[in-house]
Image 1 (cartoon, rainbow, N blue to C red):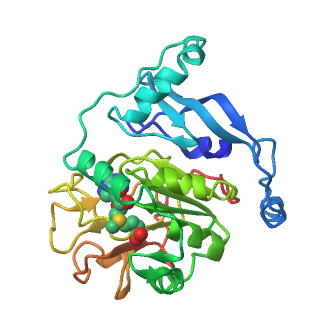
Image 2: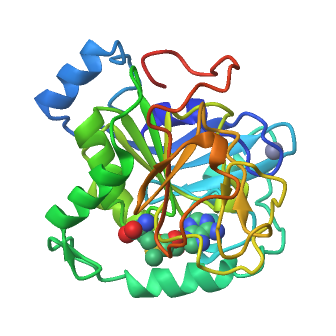
Length: 307
Ligand SMILES: C[S@@+](CC[C@H](N)C(=O)[O-])C[C@H]1O[C@@H](n2cnc3c(N)ncnc32)[C@H](O)[C@@H]1O
Ligand SMILES: [Zn+2]
């Protein structure tokens, strides 16, 4: 993970800020175009080109720790193989910390283990060969741009929920020059993190859509495609006005408190935020985004340049 991502990460258990303890760091060579972009956005500080390969994200508020494993922040709330591996490898480093931060030990939400296992298996040997879901990257890109439309003016941040291999997340950066963050519960997030590791504007996190680990009002655009029809049934957070699956309403919904604004796009086009609760066209492919949507009227947590 790029070190500066820490600024927008929050504890998925209690939403407290996270401290970063770095155990292993890398400084990949950054392409000139990315350095130029960072300079133009005023983002070129000491942390900009630092990548954390191993470390601990620690919440002082609830005394919980989250490992960064092979460059990927693992911000899930239940134990996984990555936690076991991390403990074995970094026992000495962990013992030097002044406080102890046990890993989270909650039960997974219904369906989370299934999703994690099945998609980790499905994409374990994907090679970024120009075809995704039997569709060329060019066609994927055309669909993505049709769904997203234009970025809101001055947009600097994008979130994809259920990003899989990160192909759409990378398109968001390419088209809108934003910091693009992809979240996925499966190890596709690790694939994405490694494949795009030289791009300092692409960030991947292993986390669940039910417990997103971000500061509120961080993102200018939020997008999700092909995720809501996966288990569990029903999805939690039923009070949301932000996103409803048309065929499972009202039990299927997501809260989007980390977006600065919202509206829904489906394959049929963008649906204004005001009608987001009940008028989306049925589709198994769902996209949510915030192009041209009105601000919520609340102050944004991030700086105008990004994070
Ligand atoms: C059909 S794939 C779509 C991937 C990507 N959006 C695309 O269009 O290529 C569904 C993805 O959603 C992820 N997913 C399902 N439930 C999730 C959850 N609760 N939190 C985070 N990711 C989830 C899966 O791991 C999988 O990568
Ligand atoms: Zn916490």
